[in-house]
Length: 461
Image (cartoon, rainbow, N blue to C red; front, side, top):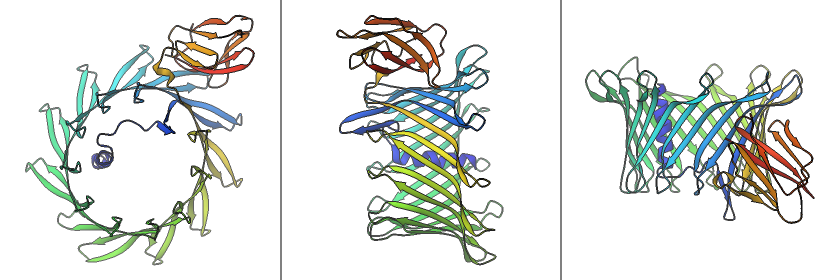
């Protein structure tokens, strides 16, 4: 079943992402491209009543803004230091399609990166993805070993019509059939029918696993999903699922109901019900899910989400509740708070959990994102205003210079936790070179004091 879930996820991603570039970490505003340089994850430490760094990630991009590298580090509280965790490298073709990514893990015993996994993407002449191949590193053969392979076929309009999943058989040293999906579409290009097959190795044939039919209204909104699935214990009997969606005048989904039917009883029963509440302009404000209580023959609450936006439409807060059956009321469970920078990029996300003993929200996790309008990891010189830092990123040393008649009076280098690790308070010249010495790879910040105070981010790798 795990294989099926993984395959469904990849199929869903593939339908929506055929030929698309890796733009997850990219935002564009008024023709200016913003890239995430790094992220820092914190956990709340109740003993010191403050945030403690948990891990960080550093990103590198090519000239087109495609992510080419990511390095993750985790922090060791006992030694107040950090260690490399894993590294991802991404590769692209001339059209900007991602062709490969390789994951490495850090081996502290040999103090080096080691191969872990590899994914290869193959495209046709029109940049439509045709294959996805996943490998794992085999330490016995010291080479890549196949794990999963997916082959895709599309119609003339680029719609996914067939997907076949293969698994690697080490005994015959070849790919073997595993799962297959067939999609058909209506005249408007909407998915009408989906059939899933499982490979029977005994008979060497595909057998029907599940089947679904989707119905749409005149506005192409999905209103009815009817699916059947073979009962694994009693072949031939079907468990049938049906999902109904209802739309308001804004084409939003105010209600969603899911049913389950058993073929042997030729009857049906409610499974779940979801109600969406939208504001006057159609933005979702609440999401409430109910389950059917067969004992009381009524709907009973399961979970509820409430959303709060800023004036510009960015999601500011998100609160999740669960239904307390004993007290018959909604109880707070998780609270998310988002803060944005002046360009509208997400700069900080804070997650809080509800403390039922104190009846307050308590901090749990936080992530801080650092953005740049200029991709500093692509150039050897990084200059903003009168300050130039070069090279950046650097391996052995970097030079800070200040132009004009201004001189550098003091230099401070500190890490993400705010700990100052280098100070030179008697510079009094317009250029200074600082050396890495024994500093580990990662993100650091320079505080440069001249006539003004400058803060610059530097990366050691």
